Image (cartoon, rainbow, N blue to C red; front, top):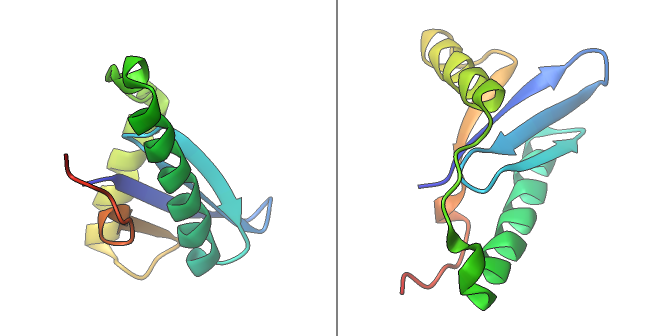
Length: 98
């Protein structure tokens, strides 16, 4: 499962999202657009990791990103229709499980 989340930034007037496992950050004007951008970048990152086995070393996402994800997850479950959202990109990706 690829844990991804996003939040609405009033100052930038855009959705800002990131994927913890792949350490991807993206911005888009809509939530659906953000999911598309994250899916595209995740697909490219996974293809790159499959091509170069040396890059498969697991690294934790920065602490700030993990804490922000935890905060968004708590808020998401307390009030699901807020200016934050969680996503699982795994279902959107066509990934070979080998």
